Length: 639
Image (cartoon, rainbow, N blue to C red; front, side):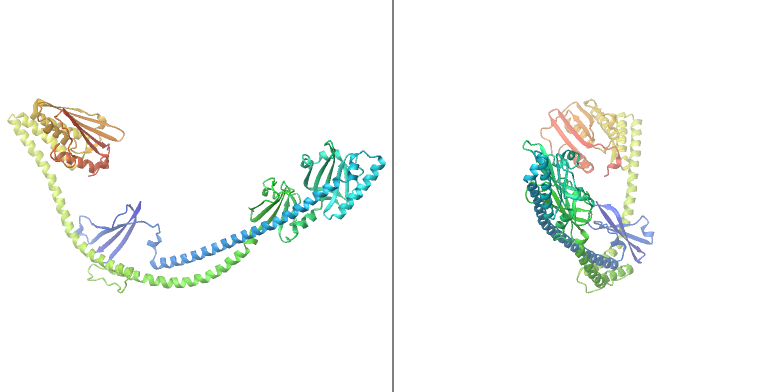
């Protein structure tokens, strides 16, 4: 559905032309048309008007009908240019920042890949240290418990000295803890510490190595002379030949050394090492060891079934986070970079483009003002001519020399004014013709009353002369005439249609006497539906004239049925019938000729394809079925 624009042009006694546009009238697409607009007192009114309407698509832009053309052109060019500039700045910023982020992400992935491999190698070396220390002969002898008291004391002293030398020689080693049966007295001043094996089952970290030979225990606290100290621990179980737990060795690493590993070649980067549970093991940004704020980044265990690290990237608040796993220890190293650092160059570029854009906008303002003035000047000239136009003008003065669309507009307006003058002159003639038509319509209303009165006088004359049949025929004819005229209405109820049909058949019975009988089987439910006038009578007349011409007795039955949407009207007779139905639309030699054809054409006008007329005939029986939609409101039908 689109809107119809209506242009009213008012002529005030050969005065100024006034224009008025009405927009919000719903209509369908159609061509330009014009029609007069006036009342019955047209010639006596000082103001004449006519209506020119065109139907087109409403663009939803009221500004084009509300503001001056100059302002619209200027604002449109300006907004368009500024919009293009904003789009360029936006996409430049978006594209450059995206490229920077992608490049930085790839660079960080490569760096983290190398870092994770280095960390994996470093941590694996401590796994190797744990294997070497656990297989030391003296260590095996001490934890076996098969030595004498003297040998145990000497062996434990030697073990402590040997392990201490290893710890002092490896910078990253902090301490070594040995959980064994009947441990020696623990000395907090030595880097080798001893504890009772049974106490290990009470430690929370024991479940990490309970089902494996060794495991990284992430961060722990150990007691030193300086107080509790955070360490990174690797635990290894030592079993007897029977598989029984003999001892547990814990190798502790200094977190500061691991932090230095992270800072190598990444001094200004924010890098965090997470264990398999997502807890912080080490960080270059002084985060609390053991914190779990980045635990969600690894989605649980990052265990890899491949030798090479697996990598990913994601967004954490306003930061870019790149992760890389360390398969050998099932840990993850992440690098966190704020987006504002990544997009700083893009922001600076956008600011420079914005500054250039401001200068460009000023230039565009000047150029746009000049162009809009040149473009709108012919339109303003035409508007001034329209305002000053009078019907008494001999010729419209319009700018000359335009060979473009403005020239076509000027020529169109000049042609329009000529048509206006011709149309104005034709309005008087049209008004006179309308008045004559109204007078003829009034005269036509007088004729039916004359006929009614004449038939009534003839009826009384027949009664006075004792001619009862003639009187009855005149009475029936008068009733038929009243329904047939119906005060000019072309739509009547089925009740009136059946009355008309009954009057007609009673009129025929007077002539045919006992040779004609009829039966109407119509339910009261359908009597109030509306139908075009004189729909059934032509078919009944056809049956009487053609169907019963060779028979002494004829029977006509009228039946009506209904369904959800339609009425089905039946006219059935026992006439002679015919073997081949005639063409209903063209034939006038059969079935009542023009009358039936007229019925079919009227049904088509009122109902279109929804109406249907079928004729089924055989020897001794003809059935006419008329299908039309049910209409309970007369206003739904219009001629």
